[in-house]
Length: 484
Image 1: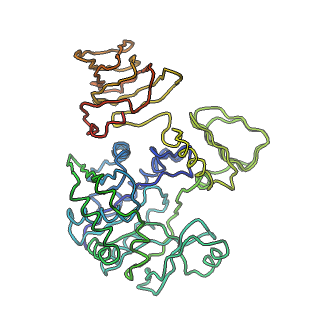
Image 2 (image 1 turned 45 degrees about the horizontal axis):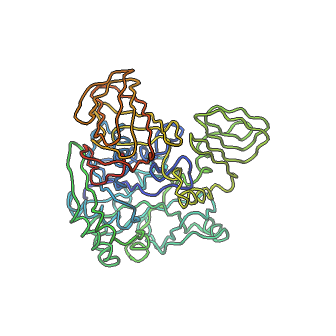
Image 3 (image 1 turned 30 degrees about the vertical axis):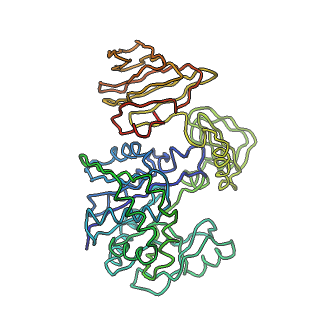
């Protein structure tokens, strides 16, 4: 049996979980009540399988550094981390094709690829490990294996898999994939025992997968091959990355693995399983993770309630007072507030879509924005000024950069900063400050062993994040100059 390589697919914006999930900080990074993110839980689940020493992640290059930070907190056993970085989303078929070609080159044609979405919750690890072992055995017989979840309700929001003939006591050939059904069909599926929820998890030998792609989706495979041939790789200590070439990636068809391959192939099997699974696809799903009080309420943060029943309230920063409410979802973040009927949480995505149509920044970013070197938080902004709190990690460095339209006043709150301001280089200690004029090249470095915390006051005619000219950058962002 070949090497098992888990591959975490981290894509999608999670618009139904706005305002916590944003396009630049999507659903896999959401913290659950135990303070672990969905991405971290997926990492623990994958790295905890027997014999796993390498883990591949396919994700957007804009969240690479945040992803690495999430993994490093858990990677005590030094699993080798490998990344395929997409310049933009192209759906699951290209992501899986790229992963298969990449794994074949590194681990051989008989390697087994375990595809795991980054945004699902599985509470029964033993059942998960058992299902993976069953899938691995079917893989060796030449099957493309998907995991089908035994349905617990008549769900109209999921696709289904219909079981065909039994292959062994635990696996079945797939008879067909079924689109999201109406309520009557979903009720029938629940009764007949032939239908399973499609979890979007797969286990496949890379040679079988590539052969089936060659047969059923050659356009996808050929385009991904051409893209990988033009892509650059970097190898470091316990980490490597391949950044997919943007120019050729635009030519890759935008299609799911279900449509491109699984619905066409005759070599697809399904393993029925019960894993304590949730796709965490809405605020209603999130609230089901926490116990309710005697009035049916679940609350995170400081709340004062009077005659409130069956509500979910999440407000970690501000006190919430509520009177005479029933069956509402209330999510408060520093820059956006969501109030929704608990029966209509699937429609939250319409708010995120409208914000994106308007070009409003709340669809994309939080007030606190993660960067490779740390974070910045917009504290206040108005006409001709913006105030930020900047946190730079130990030994981290911002790019050497320049702004055309704004000046910046830096004040060190804690830690120590090494500053470049045009030709000058100097140190700033706590309670010291400096002024950066428009047009001056400048850089900020934290040479210490604790976080550097600063207040930055910007002033000028234009304060957009795209007013940046980068000269050098330790994170390789100079060719993509628009972001800090």
